[in-house]
Amino acid sequence: MSVPTEFDFALIKIGDGATPTEVFTLSCGKTDITANFVANSTDRNVRDCAKPGEVPVRKTKVNSKQLDVTATGLTDATAFGVEVDLVGTRNNVKIEFYTDDGTDTGDLLGTIACNMLVTSLNIGAPREGDSSAELTLASHGYWTYTAAV
Image (tube, rainbow, N blue to C red; front, side):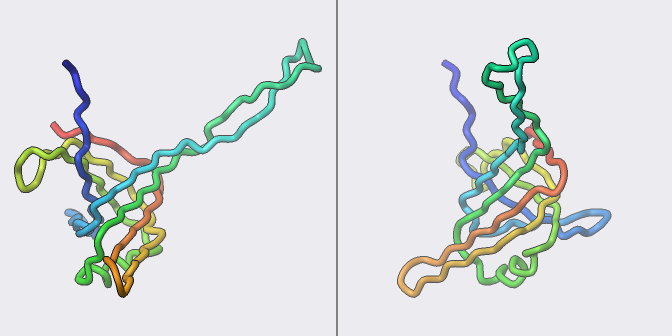
């Protein structure tokens, strides 16, 4: 029997831009990570030259690719000042995907690396209920996915 190896959880880490060794800090409490890979396209209608009266067919041309990431979960008051200052800045980001393996850290399956613009930080702090945080990021250039060895 063959079954897929599933991602059980993901972590998002944001780089500090330091050289020569950049340090990546975990965005603590963000328990739900969504990575959306998109091919932006343009549609064109093309007619058959031999049958100009026939309904044209659509031809699609890819004009760019993008990666959008949303990280949601708990608020972290100790990191709030750092994360609010990230809004509007570009940073190197790593999204690490893990499987639960019975250890404290999990088993790393792979990592997406990309320079990303932090587009928003949304905080929900209802008087009655649980607080929440959402960090959204947009790719700035190419990304890579590296499977763990």
